Length: 635
Image (tube, rainbow, N blue to C red; front, side, top):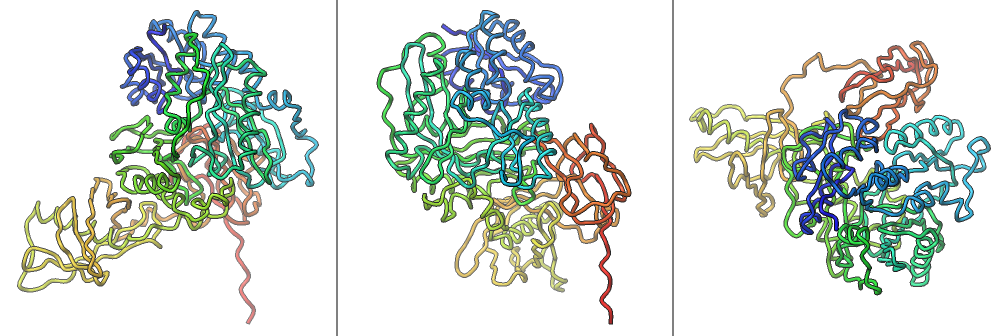
């Protein structure tokens, strides 16, 4: 029997495994990098072992250090979680050779299926030769042979970009998984991403725990998942389940695993088998009423699964909450997560709590929110409303995008589900949410109430000019600014003069009630020292009355969209070079993803401040492209 388990991972999945261990009476050991010294998974473990350094290559990808940590802490088993070393056969062997229980499939099964290239060879599917790709083959997909989560994946639509994308995908895969192997395959446009959850014991029993739909993706990384996959024809669903079971039996699989398919034109195309627990496993757990981690441990101890697969019930949907800005190229965000509170009735899987810091070294996922209901429509409604009500104060997140996605007619209409959802709908989904004008009024009146409480003051016989406050997007987009004008009243309240039609019902530093068109709405307000104000789901910033001239930047300046590290500069790029609009100039690495920075317009590169290895903060000047001046029209 397992008595002490080390999780060779971090964040949300480590906390998830620890939760089951507590229920089973198994003590827990965490490993942590220097960047994670105060992380939630470290605080929740019974013991923790430091892995010196911050980069994954120095810490969570060092299998030798993790095995030493397990032995030093007296662990008798290792759970790999997902990502990092979870699909590394050499690591699995090292764990077993050290006399520890490996919570995963046999190393031979990992080797057979964890590498996408070898898995495809096993099934008779040959990748494309990168040197032989022609225009006729486009679009193609560059894909990491190891790992998952969308890292090391690039869609190539122009042949001239293939070489750079191969390098970028390989570097990203090496950073995330310790394996830089990539391959090229045809890219199937806008299919449905459907997968089958497997659980197998060492006695020949194989459970196929239904299907999941994971079609809503950005950059090939899943955003919203659900179980069962809705609207599949019965014959196609049966074929997917049968193929998954046959694949597992062919390699003598043991433990939890997932077989993934791309469904297009009524046909299923094999993608890969993930020889680990998937990020989206909670939806399967909710539908089948099982604890997959507990079953993983039982199977690893030699236990037998019941011969009959559990019966499914209802529908479950999961949304991944990321610290990122979908409206600005999905740029990852960092900073303090000042408040994180989710309504009751929602399953929360997270590696963060209020007050924790979101750094630059790892994946930007904050949490997964999962709901279960009798029907898909009920689950959709329940999750969208829960996300709306969640209090998430700190860096920009994709919360508004998630709500808008769940309520979009293409998502509610199952027939329209496919991986092209965000390509088609992102501009509409990332427009500023309504109600920003009222949120700004609430912010202004809450601030006025706080000042009145500190300094006194109020209505005067000689009425002074209206007070004016302006609030807008914290990132400086003045197109979304809201100007508020108000004045104190004789009875100690406030009168709003702009925007029109707003009556103040009550105002306090943390809560404001406003009436418009006969309807009273209540706003919870939290202001922070940096000028950021959270009003319900709105994140605002108070605008200064006067612009600091030092904040002005030269036209054509390329600023870092996120904190990160410059990993590459385009070959041969130098000051004085002519560049064209959209030309890749340099690459930043942040949160285990590479982000390409391109020329905003055609012109001349007049400054280049980026160099490989340089760490930059958000807003740092990277380069300047002086654009070509258009000749004035002749009179």
